[in-house]
Image 1 (cartoon, rainbow, N blue to C red):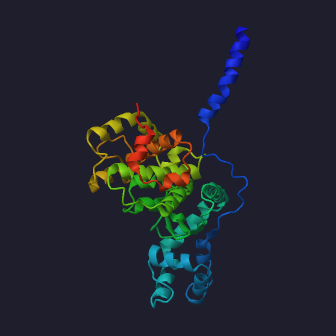
Image 2 (image 1 turned 90 degrees about the vertical axis):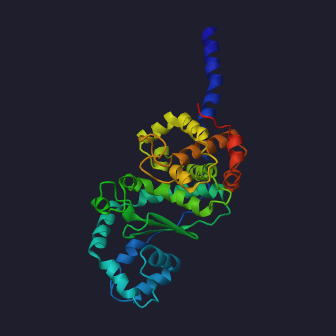
Length: 338
């Protein structure tokens, strides 16, 4: 009888255990068939047969007018097709020794872009599930001369492949403008999470209610939860760009970090430097030990939002993203790490 009882007890607990481990964001997207448009603009641009003439550039501009202007005006900053110096500046960009060398590295590193395309398409199927009324952006890959990583405009996402050549890329170490802690995330496995985060920023801009550190932490936490929703199977370290060691440090020291912010009355500080200290990227978080990663304010905000959504399963992702009652989210989350 004891054996039977124990088996029954285990059987009765199994659904509870499975429910505890269930990821509410792993929804059924099998019925979503619309794929996102991915344009390899870098290949089309560098494959122009007559780089010293304007006619083919005009044709490319006509084919992709919005992205072409975004790329030439805002990213590589050579102006537009109607500018007098444009042919010269564009030709110089396309034939520059370093750019040509980088283009060859990009071709080698991304000789098979299909795995990344599949990940992006899957992410935006999740996006369509949560936001069926939203229009899908078009994605353009390019070479920016190390100017941008992921950049966006209305219904456009640009990916600079030359910013994802791997942390061992010699060019990154030669460029004094790129610090080491940023180089660690300049690899192709980071593209998809960067795309998801960038699209979250574009669709859900920071409101004027995020006036203090707490507001900024929870706003960023919402963006990270948006990344969770688009990439429910991706590991956290890749989503936020931490090493495994850095992520473990945050988990281990979460109670102490929260206690420090409370005791030092940082949560309601509206001083710009206090907000930057905990939100902006850095080799470590100023005010925490040197072992800490940067952006720990974002990580804590992420945990608050996760706790809030766990306690409120009735709240949808669109409702969360529209909620700018940051204090209310904290209060309703019951967040208190121990």
